[in-house]
Image 1 (cartoon, one colour):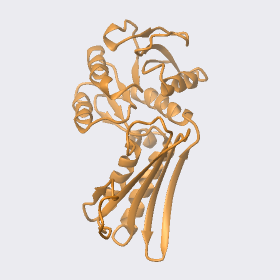
Image 2: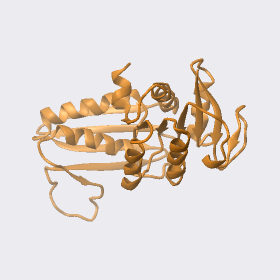
Image 3: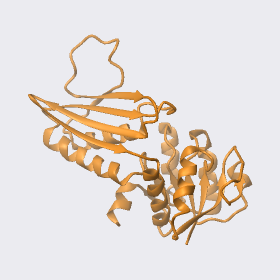
Image 4: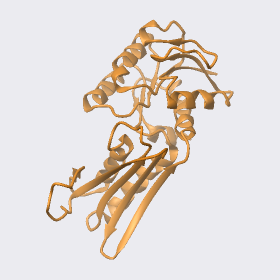
Length: 252
C-alpha cells in the first residue's frame, strides 16, 4: 500500500485524485494540504505543508504554482518523492524542480495522461518525417476556468516536435498584429477557452495539398488522476533523480 500526501486536495483535480484512489487497493490518501481545510474525504487536511504531521510515502501535488517552493521543501525535509502535476509553472520553478531532484526523487510532467505521452512520441516521429516541408500548428482547447495559456501540454508537445526537427523553431503565440507571411520555421499556438472542455490538443502538420492531424481528447479528469496515482506508485521505489511519463511508460 502506498500512502499519499495530496497537495491541493480540495481543488477540482484534488477531488478527482481522491475519488480515483478510493476505487483502488494499491494506494490511499492519508492526508491533504489545501487552503480550504475542510476534511470531507476521511483524511486530515492541513493549511500548509509545514503544518502537516502525517507521514506518507509520496507527495502528489495538484495545487498552485505559488505553493511549489513549500511542496519541494517538504519533500526534502521528509526525504520522500514528489509527483509534481501543477501546471503554469515558470522556467525558474521548473529549474527548481530539477535542482530538488538532486536531493530526492522527483516526477514532473505537464500532462499525466498516458495517451498524451504517446501523442508526444508520435509528434516527434511526424516532425522527423515531415517537419522540413510541413508547417506545424498546435491548437489546444480547455474549459473557461483555466488560467494559463498556452497549456503546459501544448508546450510539451511543441518540445516533442522540436526534438524531431533539423532546425530550431520559433514559437508564435499571437499573429493578430503582424501582417506578414508565415515563417516556415515557426510553430504556431492557438488557445481556446470555453465551457467545460476537459482538455483537447491537436498538432497539425500542414503540407502541400495534404494535412496530418494528431489529436488527443481527455473526456474526464479521471485520466489525469489515474496517471498521477500510477506515478506515485512508480516513484515509491525510485532512487534520487528526475522522472517523467517516459520512464513510467517504459516500465509498464
